[in-house]
Amino acid sequence: MMRIKTILLSAWLIAALSAAGFAQAAENMSTWDQIQKSGVVRVGCANSEPWYYKDPATGKWSGIGPGITELLADDLGVKWECVETTWGNAVAGLQANQFDMMVALDATPKRALSIDFPNGTLLYYAVGVLAQPNMKVVKWSDMNNGDTQVAVPLGTSNDRAISAMLPDAKFERTKGSAEAIASFAAGRADVVGGGVMWLMMQNRALGGQGQVIIPKPASASTTSVGVRREDDKRWRDWLGVAIDFYYHRGKTVKVYEDFLVSRGIDPATAPGIKLEDMQ
Image (cartoon, rainbow, N blue to C red; front, top):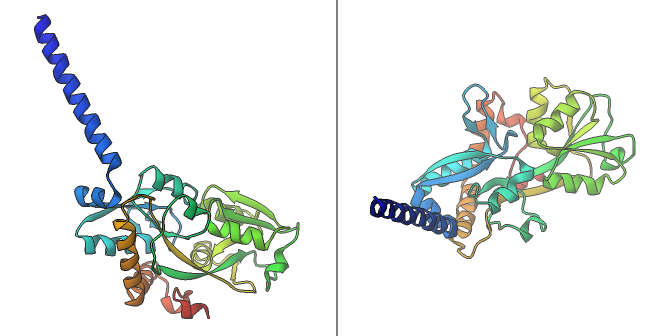
């Protein structure tokens, strides 16, 4: 009996050590090798259209992020999936290997201290505000006072950019995009700051309750794809080639416009995403 117990214990230890070895190997595996082995590319998805939109009825994701990921997956010959997250958790999620990339994550000097970004252009967007209908805003300085309450999603690059332009305004930094819009809808915030594409979609959802404004001087920004920092650069470098190809061949614009149409919006009435649209 003792011999049988010893054999069973030994078998269990061998299995446990093997499992630990496999887990350690997966942990040490590069993103490129993980994708090739699993046959799946994982994208972090923060519900904030047009970047990411989760249909409440079906749970299906669409938007620029999922659309670009689908193009990447097709070219890689793999499947793709969304891992729900927030903009504020994007960097930590990448570092923890919760997902392989975050599409539409702005490449900022601060983020570049912790994660990597591929070379190449994803798209351009203008920074603006969704303002209450009674407000008159032409310049950023029109809002730079202690009477203006600004809501911005915490951890976004636009939070830092708008904070620098409105140092005297009062800020409510919300957990996510939905909370910033809810503050505006409830009248707690005078304006919501962010990319005008996102603001346009939110104002539409509110039935045109506010006004989307690009204050002067106009502030345009590029956005990118965040990836985990690692020694193996194949994933990062391949992404740079791919997103640049999609941008210049019109595939990124098609992803954007197809999403707008799916949401009942005429692309001709929406902000553009190419550099010439900002000029």
